[in-house]
Length: 235
Image (cartoon, rainbow, N blue to C red; front, side, top):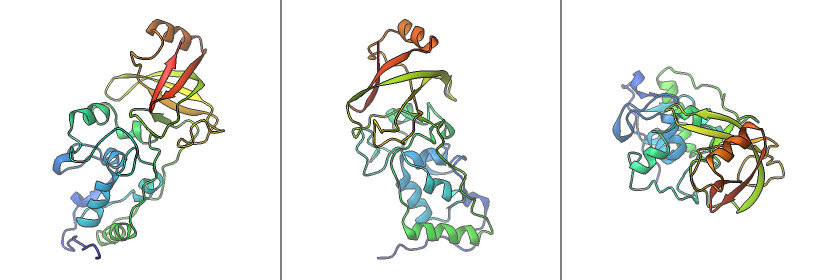
């Protein structure tokens, strides 16, 4: 059965125009960046495009971008029935990061249905707007923030360097590591010689804070692991 087109030809206003760097202005996701919602609940964005007057002008960027979560992902983040205002999700995502920080953190392909894309294009034209050309890309210095457990990661040890000490938009300190994934060590992640991954410091890492800082400041190589879907650093 074909999806009904719900948009109204008489509703031509900027309220219907969506852009991933801007915040939702309605519903349970009000105040959260649209791109953030796309990364962790892309099926909701598709529903909005297929069933409301709203349209996404940077749909080409969304099509190019991988997502962190969708209904087929084998991760330990459960979004269904909880919405985005769940306390755990809030702490993991929109209360700790901006969309700009997480936009390179996806690793799963998401495909919009042809009808959703068609409706989106029609609404752009109806509103006298222009679809923005694709500008998003994954470069060698793109940083993936490792913020959830990914069951598809193999348990494997490798060498990594700490490149930088940084802070999120919310002021929380994290660290950027680099390792060679050109072989690749981890097939689900991008194949590049300089794969960059960001992580907070976790107490269950097998290294003290003092030893970690000493090695990082001395530009030494760390023994790293992916273990049970998590990123670890060893002494």
